[in-house]
Amino acid sequence: MVNVTVWNENRHEQKNPLVREIYPKGIHGVIADFLNEEGLDVRTATLDEPEHGLTDDVLSETDVLIWWGHLAHHEVADEIVQKVKERVLNGMGLIVLHSGHFSKIFKSLMGTTCDLKWREADEKERLWVVDPSHPIVEGIGEYIELEKEEMYGEHFDIPAPDQLLFMSWFEGGEVFRSGCTYQRGKGKIFYFRPGHETYPTYHHTEIQQVIKNAVHWAKPTELPKPVYGNAKPLEEIKQKN
Image (cartoon, rainbow, N blue to C red; front, side):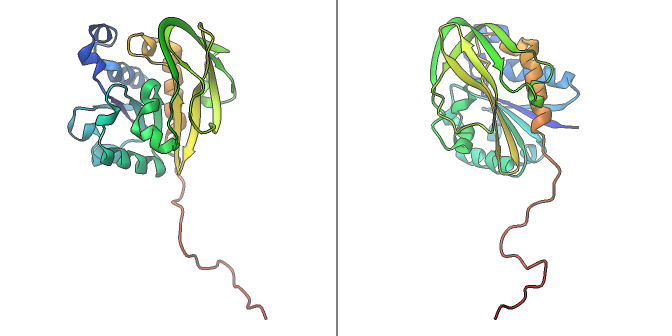
């Protein structure tokens, strides 16, 4: 069983009636629901809970953490970010969604500003699959089309992805690297662009499928823990004259 924690800032849902109408259980609630249908063990956590819902016990039991934030990146405590980072480096998977590109945890793991262009204009987005062999895009056709989404445009200030899975085209003409994988330490990271709060993006079946696939891909791999530091030789080292 894969243990998933869906973390959501949960501020738009409290401030904006339109967001509450689209996501009455919160963005975290709809994501948790379709992941539960996948047979995963899912819990949720939000910003205003003690320790943002990410206690030591929760993090130690989490195989994959999903992260959505926007309005309050600055309110996430640095000590919690450091704990999440350590868990990723030790093997926990991390899926960062939409405006989570500007979260403290993503910027820390990327080492760049993670800045980009953006525009809200109710425009069409077409996410082209550029690596059809990758397990995260299993069950997806040549592209996913969203009738309305927020535009994110290049240049996206991130390190070159280990693998680029989606490239978005927007009705206004911009393109964007919308599905990027990384490895940091023993942990696997997937950034997935769609998901502006005023659009029903997380109700879209193909978007849900990508996130489900990403959870299975990002789960920890059971490998021996690497040994670091001064090492004794495995073979006899003969003295050189």
